[in-house]
Image (cartoon, rainbow, N blue to C red; front, side, top):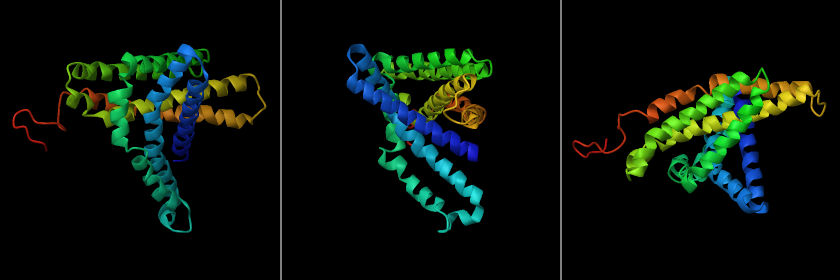
Length: 253
């Protein structure tokens, strides 16, 4: 439970810092570089609003479980954290709206350039991880997850191209869950790359255990969270259309 909380909280914080970096550079950089950071910020913003809001509630709830029945008593602050956290996925624009924004607006943005830029960043991270024997297997996992996103979009995009936006966006929230899990996985591999580098340099800025904890949590995330995207992909590419108009009787269920 504690590892899940750490994976969610620090992964979310890393993504928010990443967005802040793109916001600063989109404001201060010049030319194409300025535009590229703006596009990355546009793409990552709905994820940065959704993943911490939804998964933060999971993290707080897990903390509550550790305390058992006492957890929801006024003696502990977690019960208030859980109440406060519930509003996040509503006033951040609601998860459903952010999901529609990601798949409906940000993925096709500039003919997919924003997604292409993110893909290039992921490939850079994968290449760096490949230089470390202990991280190479996780680099392969992230590369495979990038392929899953392409599979999902390869199935969905033909709907959008022929104007069938109902089918294209029917499972936008599932796509958000899939994409955000992979994007946070990317952040964790970035952190593991840096932690491994600091350990190899015998960097003394932080204790050795600090860097080791980053790598250990990355491994936890890749074991317990990243496999979930396979189920998302299966749902997204299913031929069953259960949540939209039935073609035989035009009824909603």
